[in-house]
Image 1 (cartoon, rainbow, N blue to C red):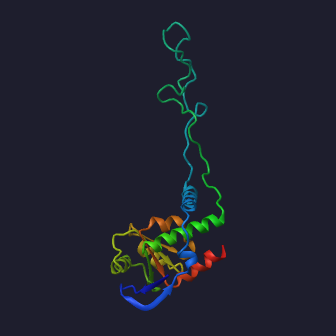
Image 2 (image 1 turned 45 degrees about the vertical axis):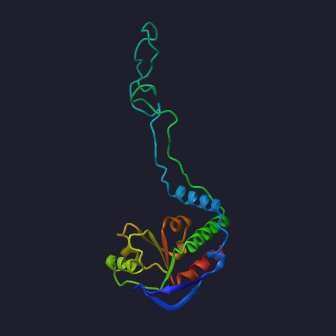
Image 3 (image 1 turned 180 degrees about the horizontal axis):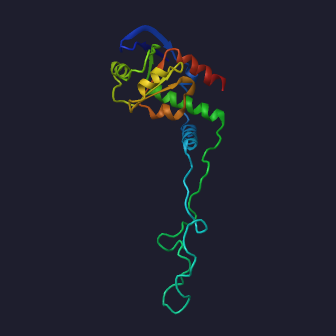
Length: 210
């Protein structure tokens, strides 16, 4: 698949680039995508939720009323789960939600995600650029020049250009990551993927080595 390379002013350059069919034109595997997205989101969970059970909640252990003769059900401690403000039964406790996933599955999921974007014509290859200082207005103008203003975008940069990252951070629908940090969730979560010219080599090298 051949794509035109665009300049940051939105115009087409004279250069073309060929995307590797082994990465951008494979048979998509939806199950692999589901597993990888589930893996990514599970690894992000803090798992710090906690509840108070009968042994940990504070309260008197005095018997509330006598056992018999009241005409009602038996009642023991005020910490009983059946009483309002009482303990929780089988509530969640801190845990680790992360799990391991086979590298081949993760690679196939990324291939599939990139293939879907390529088939939807939702990939733009952009000439490499950088900022001398964080400039949110300048990055926003680039998106406007590419007719992507207001869309959820993902920029894959070929290096850790801190200024470009900081320029996009205040834009709620724009995200910038290194090409080497490419993952299935970010690709699918974006409406349009922008790839810096030299990032193509990084993507091919990373996914080819794994």
